Length: 109
Image (cartoon, rainbow, N blue to C red):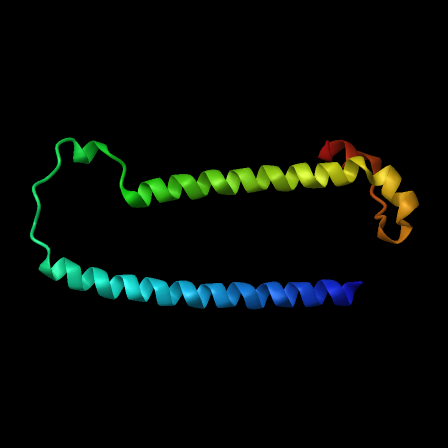
């Protein structure tokens, strides 16, 4: 079973590396176009109250911080469910059962 996990981990790493390279290419392309447009675009008048609006960077950070919190909750929930079904999995799949002290199960709940 450890070999399957290792292979899945390696495949995940390769996929992430491919996505990272593609993102780099995308960012480079957008940067090139943005530089070109920025040199040709005239300065536009400032929008009233613009200084009271969040920046795109601030909004992006807010969304990703929230998403990170949601994923953590989902992870905790999933492992909580696994803990909850452990009495069954110990009998149905004994090779997957991990003995944990009762205190650890109570802390996870």
